[in-house]
Length: 328
Ligand code: AQP
Image 1 (tube, helix red, strand yellow):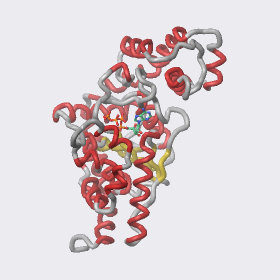
Image 2 (cartoon, helix red, strand yellow):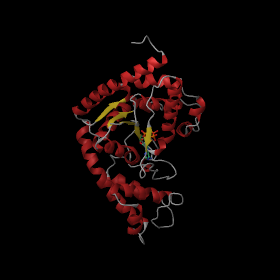
Image 3 (tube, helix red, strand yellow):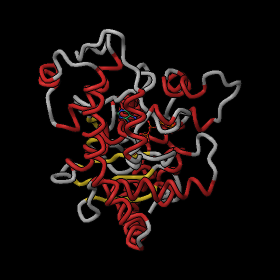
Image 4 (cartoon, helix red, strand yellow):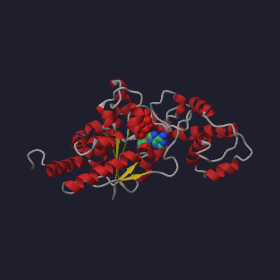
């Protein structure tokens, strides 16, 4: 069975972009793969976090994994900092990655933009992400396509180490969906939907109530043409909403165009509100059941033990191939 690894940062509640780009894949893949899903709290602290809020968000994200259908009997679910191998391997990979490579990462450029100085962790974030993946001999990484550049860097580092040392790492492949791989912000369809954007109406969180969902969708940026047509270049706002509609309702983009011929954005948005509210209601209900249960903590502890058991021999192989420590 091929092994799958992916993660989400506990920097806020999971939004439609995370769900449609990544989490949908988590659920699908667990049926016939060995899946490891992580809450990447060490990535979250690359920007300042309130400790209490961070702990809360870790449990929120873990509950949402389970609420969307990740099954802890089929998949390993755990918190990154509970497995020391992530930070340990991260250091080794930092010594095998170049500042020039990291300077080209668009996420770093975007997040450090307008700042005089940025934390080193923000700069080396992609190296820690490479460690997350390589620590488990991962074959497949299901992510949104905003992560393509980081996955390519991970592959480059793995190939470089394999070429200079003994074969140390499995070289992973990214897995990106056709639809939903990049959901854009509702208020600015040139930017991806993101957890920490200041405008709450830029995103739909999986836990938003119906009134908030309605407000965010009805306010969403469109254009003045008034025609429901999929054209991401010229009509990014409408195309983004069509994309969300298509994935949540399971209707093709062509069919949406036909169904809304002669109708305006108001009708389309009203229907999208209903589709979104109906799609998210069962997730929210399951989340409420899971979030404060003792079972959640047990699942995460068990997940960390199972993840550690896979990570330890890989880390030992890395140490052996680099000559670190005393050996066995
Ligand atoms: N807009 C998106 N469309 C599709 N997929 C997306 N992903 C993120 N945004 C979109 C995918 O979700 C997974 C988890 O990503 P993350 O934890 O990095 O979350 P984020 O929302 O992308 O958070 P930000 O914006 O990067 O961080 P903040 O806002 O906290 O600073 C990944 O698979 C990602 O591709």
